[in-house]
Image (cartoon, rainbow, N blue to C red; front, top):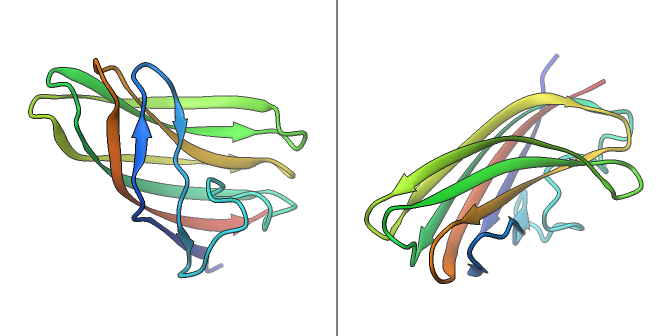
Length: 139
């Protein structure tokens, strides 16, 4: 079975306050504005799906020596947090850079998945751009 494919892009900036999780909101899904800018999978898979996602972000104004974290987050059908998936943590030395996150899992019927970012600097960092690719196999 050939998987479904989605490509997301973000070119508008997004401030990331220190020590807070921020949902990454994309400007485009497959070249068009998305219905929900943060949802990578869910609404179009009402019966659930297996998914394989990869996300890349570019950040500036990172406090050197502080952590940048990325993680996938899954929400239940009622919008409540279902689970936070493992975190990719990188300590950055020069104040800017590119960071990636990948995850593969099963999305239960009615659930949706997003990717969130956090940073532990002393001031706001800036998410300059982001891209995501998702492969989906409906259940």
